[in-house]
Amino acid sequence: MTDDEFEKHLNEDPDPGLDPTRSPGFGSDIEALEDIEVSRQDVTIGEASPAELSAADTEPVADSDAAALLDDLGADDPIDRRRAALALKDEPTASAVVSGLARAATTDADADVRQFAVEALTAHGGDGTGAIGERAAAVAVELLDDDDPWVRAEAVVALDNLDREAHEADVAAAIDDDHHAVRRNAAVSLFKLRGEAMADRLLDLSHDESERVREWAAHMLGGVDEDRARNRLRDLTEDPATVVRQTAERALEADPARFRRTFGALENDGRLLPGEDRLNRMPDL
Image (cartoon, rainbow, N blue to C red; front, top):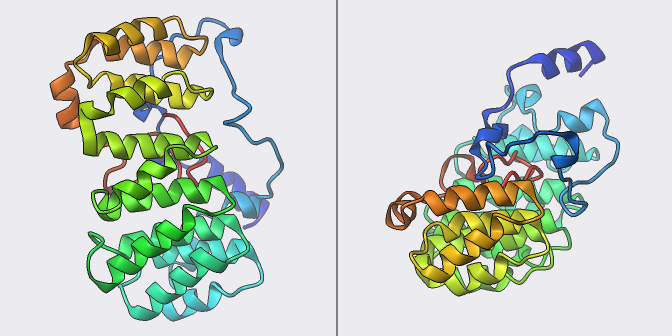
């Protein structure tokens, strides 16, 4: 991508998956710059080239067939491999595609390739049943021990989409991960399974060191019809993080039964949590 093309790309309509209104903390009243909190846990500061920033753009390989994309999974440039992994998500399901994505997800040296590959593999896994679904789930379970936390976080999303009931124990173990994104994703998946039975754990998570975990704990406590949940939400309206305070205030206004019926933060299209991009790097939740 040339500099002119990159600038044009930046000026195009934003990806709807990055819509900040999809965060439970949307609507926080920011009156001054000092009201904006940035957690060091949630932000990575670094430099990226235009090529790296466009790695999630599959337009350059739009005309490539599955065979060409599978060849690209072995390219020297990790950006080419990332783009190929994402593009294979939309190819017809075939044994070669599944095998290539499974291999990339478990062996590629680049964490983003592994993350994109398990995302794409999950799209081919259907409801987690059958040989392909079982293989996709097995890969996701393996990646729960990946060195990169964002790969682990994506693995939780994959298991949630493939068959959260069958993998409840795997997801439950992930809720104790040392990274906030993994803990958050696991809590969301388990809440969809357990509902109000998650009350004790949500109360614990409402004290988490990560404001993102506290935000989502507050959000889900809105679905717990118990005085202790409401009392904790009142406490959270005094949380140091604005996004947690605002989320707690809205949760107090929610009807718990209706909240549980409509809750589905990891569901279907794109397998993204609200506000997150395809890298799972934008945790607006």
